[in-house]
Amino acid sequence: MTTFKLDKVHSGVAFSVKHMMVSKAKGEFQSFDVEVEGDINNLEGLQVKVTVDPSSINTNNEDRDGHLRSADFFDAEKFPTITIQSQSIKKLSDDEYEMTALVKIKDVEKTEKFQVEFNGTSKNPMDGSMVTGFDVEGKINREAYGLTWNAALETGGVLVGKDVKLQGNFEFVIE
Image (cartoon, rainbow, N blue to C red):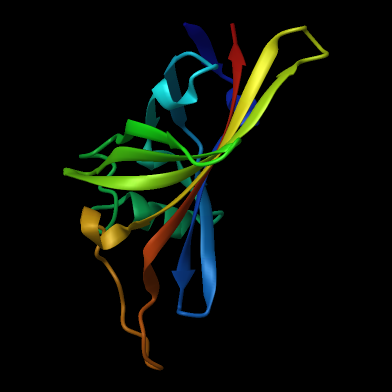
């Protein structure tokens, strides 16, 4: 059994969503945790749980962040945690995997698929510890989770796209 300790300094959870049909709004969640159980030599057997604090959202615009925390979107006061719990991990190639996971946002749970890139292991020259890393990407339909607020545009279309692209990069100290 491998011990995985998240290195939050070298990890992140980010997202992007179409804005006004012509560009993307981007942001990150600054408070999150990732628990991994299993053996580094059997990635398909890993159990992964990601917890995110939606009130930690940061899009570099405090007014927008406040709106995203409100009942129009995450309702972060009432629903203080977003969770992603792995259900299975399937090897696609030497370093590519597909993780099927149960995602819970607000009071809605849905099964989603995420692409996982295993970045290998390395020895940290600063302290001699062993580290490993993963990059994760996925896409969810925010409206399926009750995040339905929007505004029609005069030129057609809507202010906020329904598909949200998620990106995670995670580094762990392993033993």
